Image 1: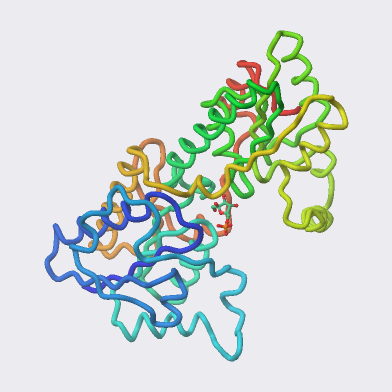
Image 2: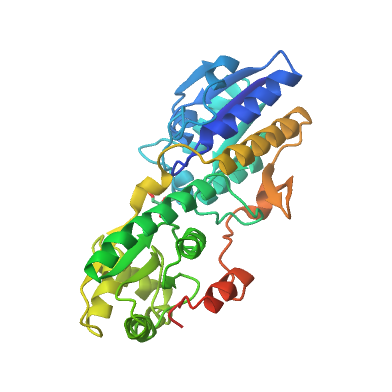
Length: 355
Ligand code: F6P
């Protein structure tokens, strides 16, 4: 049985742990396994860049971050675009057939899973495993990498707190998450911040300024604001998609945290600083929970493969590992529900969302 594996899109801490779970479970159950590891995501499949691998390649990687296969971003919207006469989809199908693969396992987030679904619709046997620190894949309560990122973001916020306190400053700390606020919400609560700004709950800067003033009245001279990279003001949330895109482009790469700081500075005299937690949120080794979940996801992927149950994404749903059709998740995002218990508990703790 010949299995191709690739890791696609932004990396995360538990990619290796997931591949290890998959491969070890396969070898436990069958001896005729051959693994083809494609290098740098879909690029490896397109350009026939791969290595033949065996069980030993996956033995010591449970607690190693990054990906032993490398990764790259191959945007879904460009997959069907022929560039310099090169047809990416046909090239991927050709490699799959040439190598006589029985299945392709894709460890990826939303864009990568859309491409996985496309390949499944093109007739390849594909299995998806839900990767991303953002935890925004529709159909699964959990994506591996998320808890490690939350832990790192939590520590980052806490470490900023000591310096914020010494200098009686306001800190706007930007947390990753692309278009959703799951990491920011959980890390913000875990770090005990004063304000959390999320893409799902547009903020009014005056409300945030009020919180800072209230802090001061009660003797707390510093304020920590956890700001998701996709945070949006009430005014901007009213813009059309096109106008908002233009607005983001006009920031010329400067992230939203700077805008929040500038808006705040017009309303309060305090010293404000911006800190970007950045890519360390995807760095380092997976936490225990991610190793645990990654192993379970991998083993379930192996079950699907051995049962020839293709075209599926392994998911975590109501405390159970199971699978859903790739077509069900493709193109959808899982957002923070502004009415959920987590948000309402945070509010009851006095955390403002700028509403
Ligand atoms: O999807 C993971 C993620 O880290 C997002 O949180 C972030 O928006 C993006 O990737 C950053 O991408 P890149 O590594 O390409 O800068």
